[in-house]
Image (cartoon, rainbow, N blue to C red; front, side):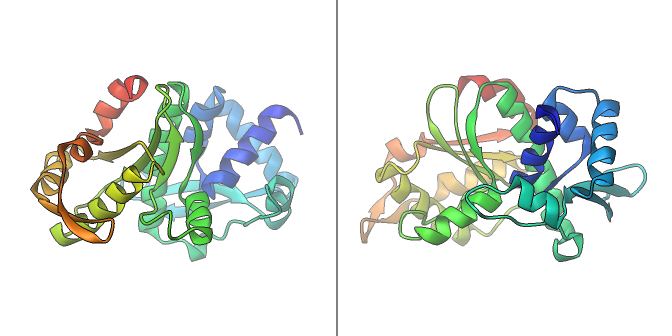
Length: 235
């Protein structure tokens, strides 16, 4: 196994599953070259693929690749390994993860580092729930050296839920667990998501209800998918 194959397996390990399109963008290899590599890894019993229903493809399904037991064991970090089982992953989870992976490869190309995806963040938060009051979809270091909590929001939540989320994140900002929060959303709902946060007037902070200070508000950023591509280098 060469470095390119190892990179493919590590990316899949971190994301649980991925596509040849995203693996191509992440590795810098042509999609045809990635396909040859994943088929070879499949023959070696290290990865496997599954075709899942997916509305935004012309064929109505999407081929995703994940690690087998042996592949997961080989690519394991910190003694932890988790293999791929498409039957235990919902279609909504797959769609959310694929969308977030597309934002990730843009960020990595722009100089972002130490990207921790959802699965890893859940593991970390499980060990330190008093620190990670809110578990982001991803955590990464921006080119400007900021530790950024990243949320990919494909649909709107209730205003009450956003009040809870803002309280949790403001406490984490105050504790310096993170430096900034970025919401990445489809263009049609980005203004509404931002408006929900702007409407929050008070939060639960340090054990009591307090008004939302402007210093907190300015550390929440709301970007559409296209705006993410443009601004990702400057955050």
